[in-house]
Length: 429
Image 1 (cartoon, rainbow, N blue to C red):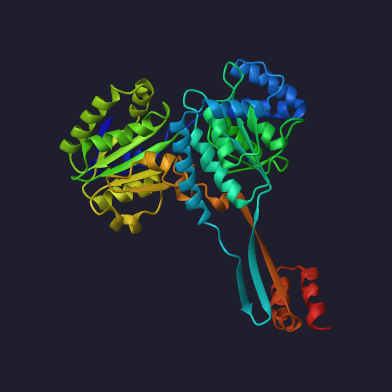
Image 2 (tube, one colour):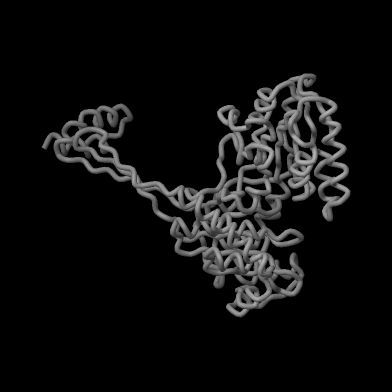
């Protein structure tokens, strides 16, 4: 990892340090749109063709059968079942507490305005497979969907070479309330969820992580009125660790590596207080990296990551706010006292005993978070992500007469005569 002194950077260098690598999107979006259009046109036939092309398996039926669910239950170890049960309980407790009571306000005598939540009827969850099947993401998405009251929770995940989905994913899907599961991955899965096929139901909103093709597909279907909304824009995963002199180098190194092993395009940023501390952390990263099964992936991620030296925790947090990380770890003494200084972050981990992996799996918070600096304007997935709010208003006759002149004046100001008359006819009658 590069070691950079924050105080020695020019404004241009500082801006560059806050930026993420950019993708060439024109060709990417063109390729993805072609697949989306094909799935819209040919439905299940297109899905089967792309599954054979990209996943190397020919499937006549992509639906996961009851027998496959039952087989998965016998395959998953007792230890895994216990871990998923504990994680599920914590995620349920935190997200259940997010439910909001109906809001009702009398804005002036005789005018009552209210807001009520309604669950999004059908949601689609995309769960990547591959070398690191994201079993925990099933819990993070399906549990709040179930708690919100979504009628259908449809899950898609790519099949392996034998035509099956990882049994741990299937077990987690059953545990958390998923309605149906389909063996479909990539762009074709997002298109099938967004537009529907003879087999896969159309959903109203798509959730879940994925590679650049999946992210492009989610973006494209979300701007099509006939498609489906999506949870949030997402890119490569990232962690930002602020470490004071009390921080153990092995803790800091482990946190940086836990994010770097996600993918070659992941980013880890460590901010500490001195050159000597930076060198100690770098040495510990090198030592731990050599022991990792995914060390080649982590090493590639670290090659475009950095250890940054700041002159104070306040400076480090200002840098963090400008960077707007997905995960922010404050491995500092009395970390809670700095909460008010944090403006832009997806999820924050306070103190030396709060690793990012706790939130990734089982503390209870959601790990579906904004990346690529979007924590400036987005929050992570929550119970609210699975509901929409409808407003209501009731006016008495007296209230209509009292508010009428205000409404007609504003309607006339905008040149909307029919709006004006809709109120005028009431308070002049």
